[in-house]
Picture 1 (cartoon, rainbow, N blue to C red):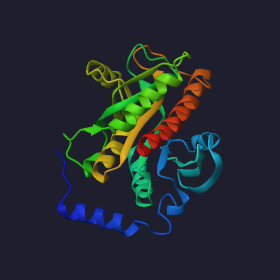
Picture 2 (cartoon, rainbow, N blue to C red):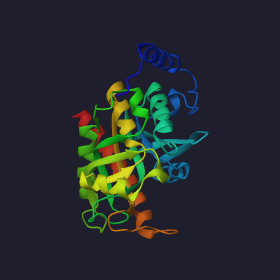
Picture 3 (cartoon, rainbow, N blue to C red):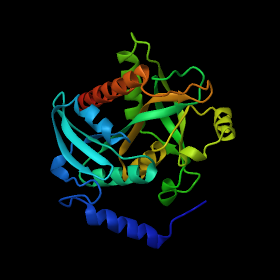
Length: 267
């Protein structure tokens, strides 16, 4: 078990306080007026452009390093999308700095590798929790501390996805995933062990987001489109129409979920 020292924790808290509410956050180059209370977090900066198409009055508010950000409105609710790049370290930076300027709800979107035979390419997978097979969370919590998604947001994602996709061929699946660090370090034996544990999918960011959400009293959830299936040995080459449909559908589901969460908060 790896624990940070008291000195390290103090330094981390000092960094957070030092950037809390300042004019521009160091890495994402955004300030409080740039963002809404809800943020979609894709890995790929190009997907920020796709999300922006679904927002009214979308404005490019920042693009620094891997972090490309738009803010706009969905049914009059201000929403931000900020790409994180691949992996937990940069995703954690984006979440920490967005939280510093007022974002309270974070939903990761993107792609994920499926580990269940009934999940087809393009289907949506929603993680209720995630194995922490990554190094970032070690700086926040002990190794044996679970990484669990926000229950309210996750339940709303599942319910909204099932309703919106009921008359389509896009499946909706939910369960425990795994967050890994080394894309090219994963072996067939590694995947076999995850399958034996009943893990639904593998991606590269969720567990750190859940961990930070717990530590900072924020809401974090994750919904991805399945881009491959290791159990069925289904892989894609080039463009895949069904995967692109899954990406579009997950964005629509997330935005409608945000609207429903806002309505619930008012009642």
